Image 1: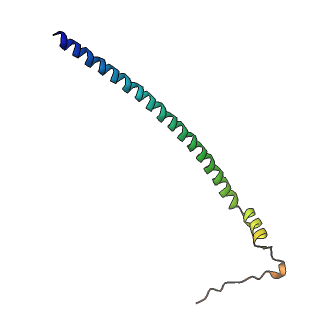
Image 2: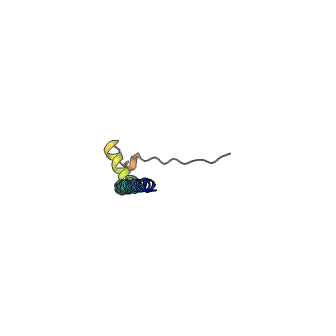
Image 3: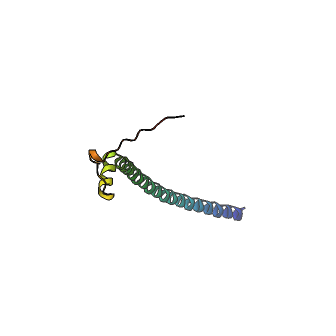
Length: 94
């Protein structure tokens, strides 16, 4: 009987040690994953800010004033003089 108690005590001690190691590993893994989660949250915030800036920029580029400024600068366009304007009437016919 005495030997079986010793074996049982050794097995229980090993089970407690394995359980303790598993708890420590689980806690470590939890901290690593939490750190990754926080890094991803920060990255999401950065991307959201960049997206908002891009939306603002996109809106600004589509304004008539920006289009006109680009046409003047890049394409060397200008408003026509009155004598350069030609009115074309569309004829509906059958």
